[in-house]
Image (tube, rainbow, N blue to C red; front, side):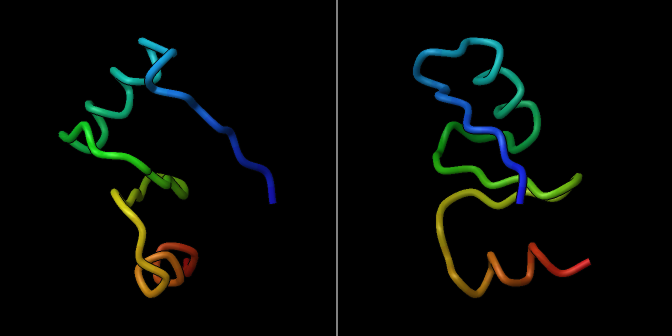
Length: 51
């Protein structure tokens, strides 16, 4: 599976994209397509992966 790792502590543009997408500064953020989750939950991650 292809992914992109963005270090928002070092990447200002990445931080701005993350805040625009989620409205939050919390990490981690996992984005699949147009959907995203903030934080980590195995159950929510499984839901995020489903089409």
